[in-house]
Length: 143
Image (cartoon, rainbow, N blue to C red; front, side, top):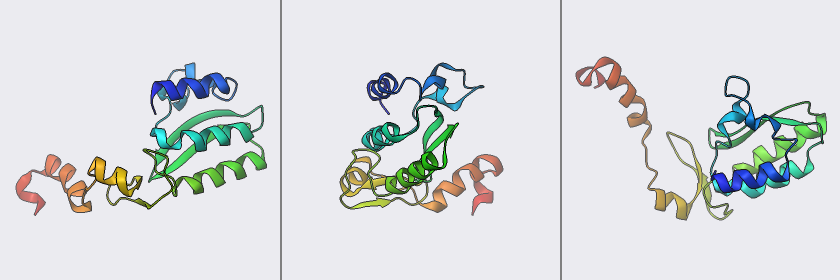
């Protein structure tokens, strides 16, 4: 996520993102938001519904979906997070579109047809697996 959008969320929800100033050894929020701009609105709406005592510890993309980890959450907070995580698989992480959204293969991303074409995301699974294998064992052993 761009620094500008991150800062908007930090200013709007300062208590929720109190850990953003902590070191990365203390909280993953030190890394900032580890997802693209397309989920900004989804995250903003989620943050507006969470309890006031919740602290975010990590906000990232993993396996093509949003991951939002917290401390001090209630059952309702975790239900809201689960719903947002589920919704993220239907929202383009890059632009926020909900039209023709799908997950890529290999390094999984959730993208709309336009962003998929623009980013030219075509990483075949075999290539994703073999590249580290070749680095470790050499080119001749990766056949």
